[in-house]
Image (cartoon, rainbow, N blue to C red; front, side, top):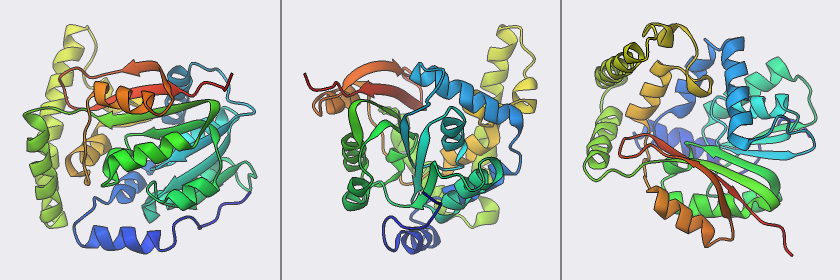
Length: 288
């Protein structure tokens, strides 16, 4: 297989038009900027976190579908662990980011496909077949039709396979607040958008610094080094403040949804009453 642009016809034009109309955050532009500072340590951390999430030291011989590949970092991590990878994203700049990493680390690789495609395109997704691992971390709540996207992702899991998803937590008071912030971000001219991002960075940075000090850690190291999953605080903040469309769910809602579709909960990491992503790994049992 080679890297090519197929998937949902017109997806690239559709995404660009939505961004231009202020209906969608430019996720790919943020990821492109993130890749400018990508280091070997960040790649190693992403790989470590994927091994931990899946409870595996190797993915050799397994197929891996990355729905919403974003920067391409976790497609890269899966490929480095030995998986046959199929990456897709709706945002054309995200597709370009993933292709950049593929060309840098696995040039001319026949086991890593990168495509433009929509998580809401049932025909396209169905044409891909089923996968041992379906991975969509922090993506499907940005489609504008989250429950449909979750349903279609679950359909791609092969018997005996895993589905890992991370979805924004529902908060009674704060969810409506953040909806307002995100709409305001997209309504602002681009030069003014940092006025919404930096207050969040400062508040989140202060909270993390207090936590670091309580644990006897130097707070500035969080900025100097890589963060959880190989990410960094600033680009995560831009993604959080600007990320639209935006939907949420409780852990109970998600567990019930996937259980009804024949998947068993293997593990979960939740954020309690805070904002952020609840992370799940579900398993599809083999027929008896």
